[in-house]
Image (cartoon, rainbow, N blue to C red; front, side):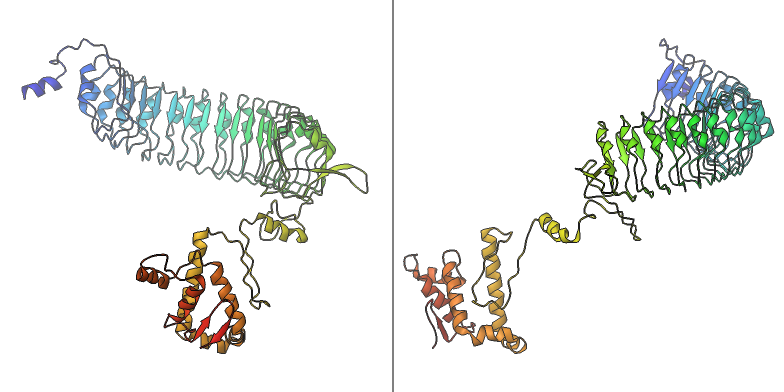
Length: 588
């Protein structure tokens, strides 16, 4: 008992000479915080016990007053002791991926806390004392079942990163406008129906994530975010984009995938620093003509809309690298697109294109060109000038990225073109099949192509053979397997005839009766010929018994004698009263 008291009492513990500042117990399958941790309470600054099975935090842990970083992520902790307020030097606290349901009020005494990660915990709400951590710069509250933020949340004016996605938030407090130093805000996967006006007051904001909500409109005050570089509004219900978006002069990435946008404002062409624009899966029917003003644009995705044409001003996008315009209603593409010398990927899949201008073949860096599921009859001959082309897709089921093409001349215009067996393209079937390499075969070529692709060929002779000769066809079996197969077939025939089924078959099948009864002489010759041909490799059970009886191979009967004995010695054979020889047939 005395030893236990000495170990737990900090004033009576032996002095440790080691100066330990960091202890790392991550992934050690611990159920408790190791006792040796408390031996370094005076020097310890960082304690990492992530990814264990710790359920409770011991009281001694909070005697480490010099602790600056405490990481408890991915454990089974459900309660944080009120003694956490004794860690007055704490700067970083990670409680993520636990079962914490409440953060104690006196956490407010940890005045030096700068980073707090409480994500993936069933908190439900934040304590009022939390808003007194005035030195917080990074706060992560993702998936914490929050329904609202405290009204005085704006007191955390030094916040630079705030992540509160995957909660049940519907609005932001007005005090939110005081977070003027905030650089990253993530409110994705909540229940916002509109982007709050207070967003426009975050003058230092660089990244704004509001994806996976039900936002129908974006506040015009977004134009005040002069430093905003990244905006993600995917998977919402946006119908329009405010023209004030032109005020985001630093915007480089604009993601608006999966919304209900019917048009884009002309002012979007004023975003000279925009490098990525994704407006796929919307309801767009046209694109602004001044889209060519996006001089820095390198990626444009307008797939899954209802576009009937692309603006010719796209030819001004000298830095464009990838252009996706799949699943639209495009009937032609502008020849000016050939001026985009930097394009490496051009995808125009599932449109109504019937013509590709020659200028497309003048894009020197083009590597991937997807034209599948269109209505093309040919390709421009200039495609051969794309020396870096690595894939040209004309069908959804095309087996190779590049196939062989033939050059021809159009009879009407004399234009030199390229064609192949995948052209002309056929419209999509109602069943949704997109076709493939074999879909363009002519009907007369299909049977030949099918036979060429077969590895095993079977030929079936006519049952009513005139001369009755046996035709040996190639089979996939080795020699031994052929003999066994033949033996089993003959054995089954004998058993069938011994049971009287041959008579019934003869009654039902005239051809069978004629073969076995009306032409006995012809059948006997065929049978004798077969027996003679396989006399060296075929031996019945009667032959084996004969070998044992005579005791040597020298006394074995000849092939002719074996054929006669094989039939006459078998009491079950229907040929019991017949003697078959290679040259004659007679009934005894």
